[in-house]
Length: 414
Image 1 (cartoon, rainbow, N blue to C red):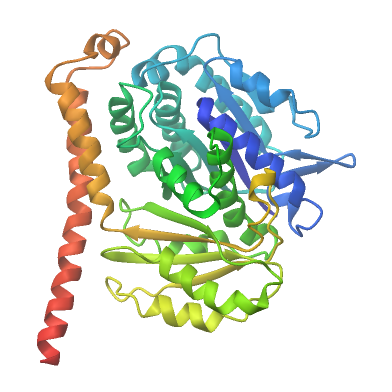
Image 2: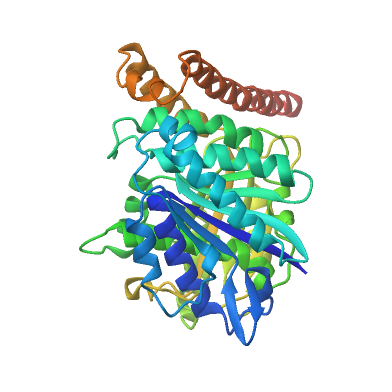
């Protein structure tokens, strides 16, 4: 039986992992394929996961939860926070990451077949960017043809940043994610705040709410295997037809209350309209979550397949056949939800904004000593910026072909 191994890196990644496994635990009795994410032994179920950080604060916070039986190899921490990519990759983080790789090997030895790594972190921080880069490179070398790396990653927000060197850390780590990951589902704090505020109108939103949103998206994705025994790779195959262009934009929202039949049709149409407000959509998939078989499959197919696609790709419609469990009571009303994944050419605007932020700091040579003093070569700054620019160009080139196809089609019709 194939299994997925979860890796939660750095403060943000660890707390997302904490929320995710609390959610998995609520779903345990209903899932039919629990051995996809758990090791079943001696009447217990142990998460196939590793939490690691360069300091111990968040790790100890997760360990205080005794309701989940983690293995002894599931936690690892260092003694000091790695504030920069260079420190996370080359110095303090290097030793911890090497130990993490050993812990991963020990747990993988118990599996009959490793299907994928599910990775959570924030690339604004030094641990999430630096340790992730070294780790994913090693995993790619050891398991390249046997398993995939799928990341659910917090990117720097254009409006909310709590780390002045966040653009440096993020741009340096993008090269590794482009080379080694099969997919990267992108989140940022400001967008998640906006989504939660728009849908729930809470008086106060904190990181717990944001972590809950990421956990819900991941749970629905792995839920295809856990509840439906559906191959997860089918979900991603249509989204990532080009090797480097695998950066996905997620949308998440409530659809309707399960027993609210009077408003079901109206709300589901509104939900589709809300989730598909994108420009230059290249590829897209809709994953919705409901225990009962949804009667509106045909409507979803029709709506999504009427959207324009590049290179004749077709939409995918998936259902995670599970009740919509929630860890936080504030989200209890979200009993029927959907996650919409889009590989969207408009992502270039985010990459451009990140590259420009990187360049502004680079131009002033701000904080260079913090990176070069930890072993980063000066030339690596320019190389990282070039890699990001090439990624922008890849998306722009596909978008140009797409626009040309539409123009030719319109001319033909005339």
